[in-house]
Length: 201
Image: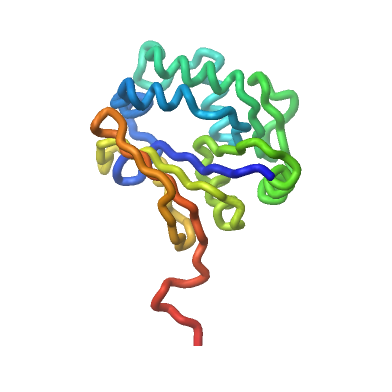
């Protein structure tokens, strides 16, 4: 049976990106990049918006505000191009142009549930906030990992990750600091039916 990992890269205040900021907020270091390069192979799950963004990068579209990709950004996109990807969308049409991408137009939760029961590899979300939220609500997420970069993007932050989430209890299973500034925390999530003090009568 597959494991499902929800994996986010965030600012300290929980934004997935920021206007005017480069990838990794420009703060990636050698320890973090080495760790990133040694991650096990996974099948990446994403929605239409993430697919459009990332496939555009793969086709050479440079992020807004940049003249060219930085080497670490280019390497990350190249690795994603080589990886297996499943895209959940009712608006995209086949054939998908980004290599190694499969389109699924059926319900994402049920499709991922079937993938988990039939496969043995690692499944991992990339971006795709709505998809990750739906999979968490459905109780399908085995591992919830956040890599926090040391910035607060209160003025420029985009894509607030946790808006619309249910209450979730998190059991820490791993933590690590990279380059003296980047913090990784990984948890086993458990969706709560109600807060601890809100006991049904």
